[in-house]
Length: 253
Image 1 (cartoon, one colour):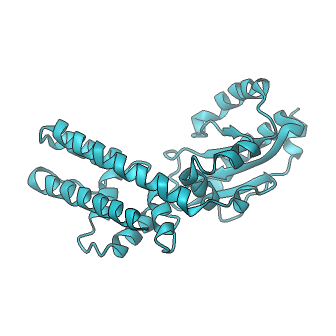
Image 2 (cartoon, rainbow, N blue to C red; image 1 turned 90 degrees about the horizontal axis):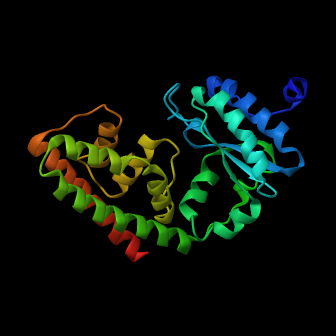
């Protein structure tokens, strides 16, 4: 079995962090060997394909497309995952091409992100050919923005003015927001950067926010900045105002 796995060819570009390649290559080889003819394609996705990847910190994410969902195969991944998770290899997302085609209108942001941030390690590059309709993307972005506004208001009241609580709320608001902001930039017909810092800066520049509120929010999440008291509350208020403006922009599209 080991000889078969070692003979499986995995395509990863040289630009990828060599530490990612060393970790993910044997993981992919085992998946391919286990899935057999049921495998359509396999992709490296997320931060591991960008400069945002942090060794021994960032999870290494993957997407596996199967012709059909096979629970015996999924169960076999338990053993594979147990061997690799200590190296920050996350459980792969296993779906079918039919599921992808039928879900583009339901999860347009997620599939837009896959299309932007992926490397095909094996099989056909279905993700590159995805056609995501702007109206579907706009609708999900609008829903996400309105949900965040509600969460921000509730969180602000619940914080009772506590700096620690407000800082945690800021970090939660920033966490996972890059895919949403990339989709919004696309809808605004702006270039869509891959790195998080460039994404926040691009949207900040588009909205003419010279105070760099968005970038400060990201830096708080990354532990590079700290605010407290009135300064922290003002930053939160500025951030809330930007989210409101983004909602207005989406409504006008």
